[in-house]
Length: 305
Image (cartoon, rainbow, N blue to C red; front, side):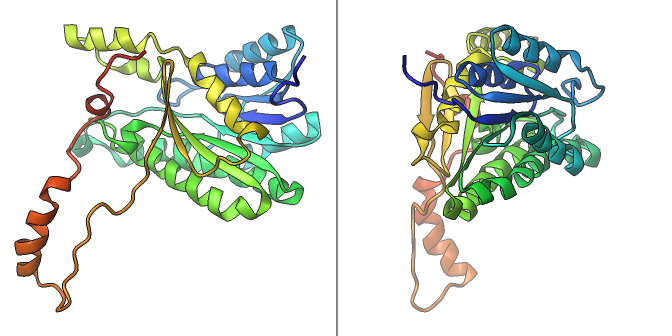
């Protein structure tokens, strides 16, 4: 029998009590990993704390013969993030992989969004990803190995209505992941992003007031959270030793490698530019290359396959 892809690895998965994180934690264990199942147990908007979801995932893993422990910390709090890594080290003797999956939603149209609604989402998604990654980084550096997988979103990569806070956090995560990949490549540490299309509690907040909205939700429900786990496990494994600084989309049975910003048009004026020459030359020259103001659903406009 072939060796399991994560045999002997110790993995921390945040937000692993439900949805995408749960699927990743269970599959990582099936592939031989020892797993710290982190989940604060809050609602979709981040309130409260229910320990049962994380404990149920641990039970699922251990009942199947795997090894796992629960952690109920808040990724937005530095000390809690450090404790997640310490739990991995104290229970399983080390830390090899981190999956930054924890998240909340506070969807509000931009001009009505409060500072608290913005800060709360940034704190969990972006700062939380930084906190847990930073806590693991010294050990990855010392052992000259490690892998990060972060969850981004097409809400940030492409765009969506009413999610300025979420989009800013998720696009920020893509930049964070790229920077980690560059800064830690000398230590043989990898960092990649997955943008998951999957039905979850967070996606479950999508309005369903019209026939079109209900049909859209019905299609999204085909994309179960467990569909994300194979790509995450691959990126955590040594099979992906040459893959770092990348962004992938997983959409039902599709996997897409996403482009990243690069120059697409360049104009030069040896005499320098004035507002008038920019208007006369640059505006017309770039018109056909401007990126349309699209939402995620406009770009991924075909039914999930």
